[in-house]
Image 1 (tube, rainbow, N blue to C red):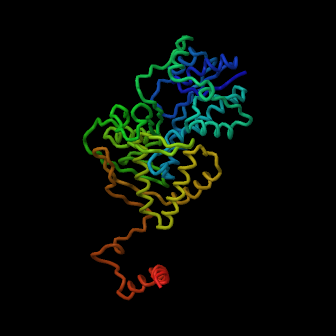
Image 2 (image 1 turned 60 degrees about the vertical axis):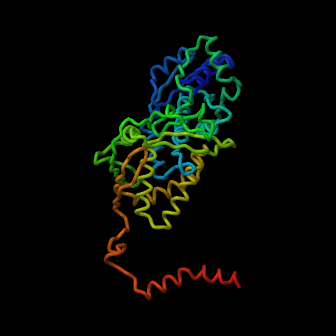
Image 3 (image 1 turned 180 degrees about the vertical axis):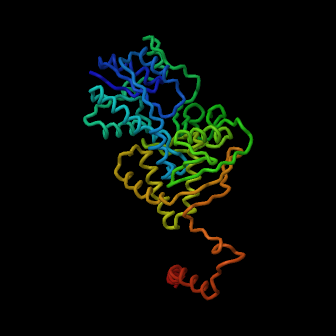
Length: 391
């Protein structure tokens, strides 16, 4: 029996290597997928082999993640419950796809991951694996073994398994698009999040940062006139925007698994790009298009968050989103100052804005007769209904 394990290098998946070998008498193949997390993948590989992995794969998926997942999030303004830019949720189907590719290569239908029975990731991994790998047999050790964190540490020590030294009291998940922080005092929704929980948005620079972001077809292509590929652009914004303290999210989140959870995220690049993109859309789309787009954006974010990446409706929503994004080309100028972002201005190639029409100082003005007629017809439904209900 051969089991392919999605391996992060953390405590759960390191213990899982030995547990899978002992429980199933199986050969374990570990797979680490690089989606932009700040990890030493050589050390992760060494740890996997020392824990008992027969073979280890490290897959560089950073550009794939940036171009085919994060950039979709920008075009669909993907903010779950209006605030969370879906960093972890977006990465899971990609990681599952890469792990499934290795399972096919290794000729096995057995795939394992480190998700617990209480989290959203189990839903995302399981559904993705069931979609991309026919007849897959999924094993989630953390849903089976019923070990506490202390039990896992003891298990590892008893067997001489090297585990990652956890210097943080928080549970961290990180990739190119953002960083999630859980645990300790953060679990109390009334407690202020301690400053030591943050990494990407630690204030290291106190000057104001003015950025000009240029979009083509809804996708960012240049920052301050410099053309960058998706990976370069996201990394630059994470560094420069994050160092001014912008990019934090704190909210009480409705999880897939049936309860509310206090969640804290850092996503400087994601929040900057989605904010700029939304502003440019508002400059271009008609009021009806804009309201329709906001509606499908919300549906899209819900599907991604809920692990339904392969739901056909997501593809349909993206077709509509891409059609509207054809017109979203232009520039947005913004300022990062004291942990906040402000839009300073924008210009769009296809914006219907006309100063000749909108200016109060000159240009077009409807006549008194035209204004009265418009107001009368515009409010007629409301006026007649209100009078009917008062009679």
